[in-house]
Image (cartoon, rainbow, N blue to C red; front, side, top):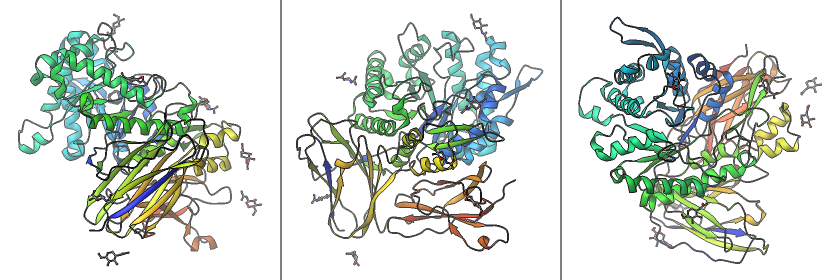
Length: 635
Ligand SMILES: *[C@@H]1O[C@H](CO)[C@@H](O)[C@H](O)[C@H]1NC(C)=O
Ligand SMILES: *[C@@H]1O[C@H](CO)[C@@H](O)[C@H](O)[C@H]1NC(C)=O
Ligand SMILES: *[C@@H]1O[C@H](CO)[C@@H](O)[C@H](O)[C@H]1NC(C)=O
Ligand SMILES: *[C@@H]1O[C@H](CO)[C@@H](O)[C@H](O)[C@H]1NC(C)=O
Ligand SMILES: *[C@@H]1O[C@H](CO)[C@@H](O)[C@H](O)[C@H]1NC(C)=O
Ligand SMILES: *[C@@H]1O[C@H](CO)[C@@H](O)[C@H](O)[C@H]1NC(C)=O
Ligand SMILES: *[C@@H]1O[C@H](CO)[C@@H](O)[C@H](O)[C@H]1NC(C)=O
């Protein structure tokens, strides 16, 4: 096996020269991709009709379709409040057992399935007022509801698919806003235990080995854990669990800790403080995995904040992930961290299209007949796609000083063994640096033991060039951006291709002149050995209407095959017997498309009717097989 010495020079424009070299021996640890959850609360009434209306709206479903069109593994789970309101109570049997109608719930779960998203099912809802009408029977009704729901899903989707679902107790039960069925301390405990029994009993009583593996973990209590007097339900559950862990109904302790003024450090700080308190008071709980379901920079998703519109939010989310990784490796109270989730899958609304805490900017185009929705991917969306490219093992976070107060955070990761190796490293700049402007450079050495033939690619998120919000603002922030402006925004929505090429020498140097880059920036460097698995054929090509003469095209990626992807190509052949229909044309020419989607809007004289196919191009400029050809015809 050959050794490749890869040196990356980071030039920074600020501060005194601090010369940093990494030590030769880098220790890698298994890296669970623990940040791949998102969530939201549907708008509207909390009732069967209200939630069904919200979740079936075309705008919301397109928002989800975009989220599902991130690279493989970027988002795996979606946590949606009141999802179980989609279930309807049909009737009670003569002995008082409810029967439920799952039609709307099934249809929505099928959509998630199509989009390759697994639900986090929160046992949170009151179909037909079944629980408030029979408070004395809740211990039975919750068990029955849970068991019936899971059995119904097992019959439809099978145990293997359900094994990726997550189950959680009622969101923030101490808040009156959420505690709409008047849980008391006692009824809440009964409820959690009933849900636990229902999960265990679903699928029959077989206790085969396979079934043990498919044990359905219950997460909870999804609490804010403010003062004990104010949040008695959640604290009480911890107390009960601490007394007898074996009888604790929850398997994964979930809580919510957000930042205070938008910084990643505070999200982690809040978690460290909370867990220290919990472990001090309830030491038995140190044995449970923990998850921060709502690890956001600042509370109040709908409050417009400029930083949430641009690269700053992307950098904050990256930093949140990197700091949690560092804390997890450090042992201590974060040792048992199982996952963090971002509450940013909301649908933004006018006039805060970009500034709310969302992954996408949503433009509701009321001036078309009928109205329709346009989505622009924000830098934070792109950031999740970059994180998905991290490998299966990662080193501890490293800091490269820019000046005495500011550092670039570096997270390196690898996958594979022997000649088939892959390396992905994220460099994250600080938001600010010192005032000096003397040019100097940091030399950063990445020592990669990978095969002799390899290739690399670097991509950037950086203010101005990957900032559709700025593009929109410079055009005067119109409520209804026209086709030209929408295209300009979309050209700024993916990470910018910085450099790519083969690596011929064992001592290769890549110079990033960050003096020319505005802060904050994020860079993803990927290196692939020639023996790394090749790109596989794109799957499940889907084309959905946006409005007249405009479609959203998305496809799915096969696991373990797109690490070395450079860009996709989308091809089109018009149907009909005009001259133009004869040839395939690459409609994505000139676009950098590292993510599996493309919006096609050929303009007034063009047509979207015809045939589509897609392929990938990797860092060695090798092309994958084309996807299946799909025909699209406008109604
Ligand atoms: C590079 O790393 C390998 C294994 O991690 C180590 O054996 C080797 O000495 C390192 N080489 C250099 C030049 O640092
Ligand atoms: C919950 O309690 C409040 C205040 O005690 C009461 O007004 C409300 O009707 C109760 N809600 C239900 C669903 O029982
Ligand atoms: C986080 O906590 C540490 C120690 O408790 C403190 O020094 C630091 O200032 C805190 N950071 C923030 C951003 O609050
Ligand atoms: C890489 O190694 C293989 C055999 O191990 C050799 O055939 C090939 O020429 C080498 N390529 C380069 C660019 O050195
Ligand atoms: C589209 O909108 C931009 C900015 O609002 C404007 O400058 C441009 O003239 C418009 N283009 C067309 C074709 O209307
Ligand atoms: C479009 O109409 C909806 C519903 O009337 C309204 O809520 C929204 O603010 C309108 N959008 C714009 C950009 O005016
Ligand atoms: C459409 O075609 C007409 C006639 O060929 C031309 O005048 C017009 O500029 C074209 N419009 C667009 C948007 O390309």
